[in-house]
Length: 287
Image (tube, rainbow, N blue to C red; front, side, top):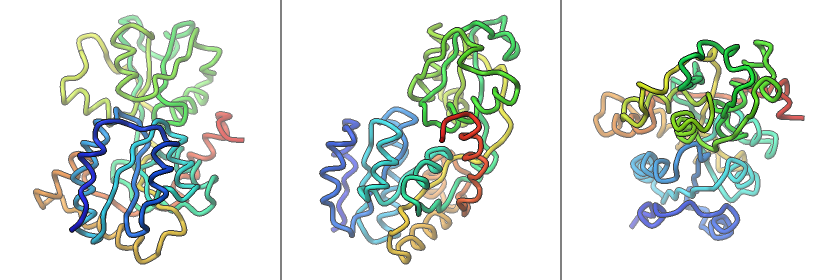
């Protein structure tokens, strides 16, 4: 019988060190999956559970989701072969590729080909970036593509050095936390993943009478599902085929896609993220 590990894992986001010391002992017939913690651990688990069950059925093997406490933990675990697959942002993929030398980006959502970041504020006087000079600002995680790297890069392209332009720069750690910081007045403005912003609006989890959008970045490539490079090629192809087979016309598949905020999954390749790597180097986030 296929194991169903999800309920047992839903309670806590364990530290990477403790978690992966146990995961390293897992049989190679179990697909070990994780994701960058760009939202609360409970939300990541909720989004992954039906996808994990689908992958179990398609691959004919157990699939375990292993939450981590920070972005670096996912990159390190892929490099140390304690993970087989991970949901990464564009920047995290670049870091994983540089760390491992052979990480393979398999698929991305259609939306990830034209991704954006959304700048928000609760200050009625803020209409453009220029109005924030000398005010406080929040990014998400340091390693976040949509919550830090690309917004910082586009600010730089507009002649704004975030560290000297703003009076204070903070890192909330996650997109939903950035919204909470702005709404509570902890910072004057912030930036986050546009998809998460739209989801929070749809779920009435942000007071739009108070918090509003004042700018959106140009488009860029972002998230993807990445596998470690030495995974069995036959298994890699089965995983890829399973994602590409998700059909929005199938109600069960659509429920999975909706949780992933995806219209469908499409193939991707490492070359798509060259621009992300160049932006990271330009922003001084890679040597």
